Image (cartoon, rainbow, N blue to C red; front, side, top):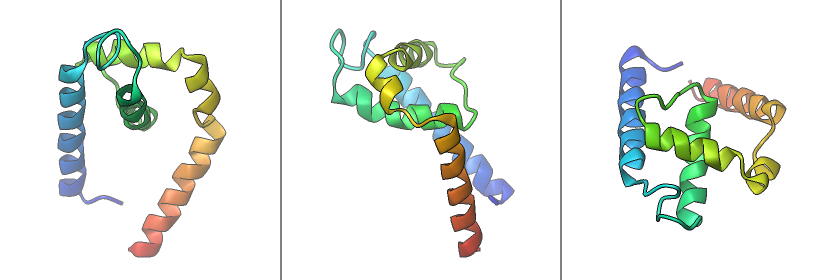
Length: 100
């Protein structure tokens, strides 16, 4: 488990990343009208933030972009299922407990 100070630092870092990404968006995609590798790379991180319970209310461009990304058929086909994500979370928890 994270210590209180560690959790606060992680939260600040997450906020910094989300703010940066929100400021970089040139809707509908990061580089403007064309979907690029930048969207795929950012999408993997942003989807993890989303699944871990972060919401993007303070980042409207990022919210709009993520919702659009999540509608892409290729994204839906390659995105881990809820079951697979829970398995991954359990694995991460076990690994962190081993290192404590």
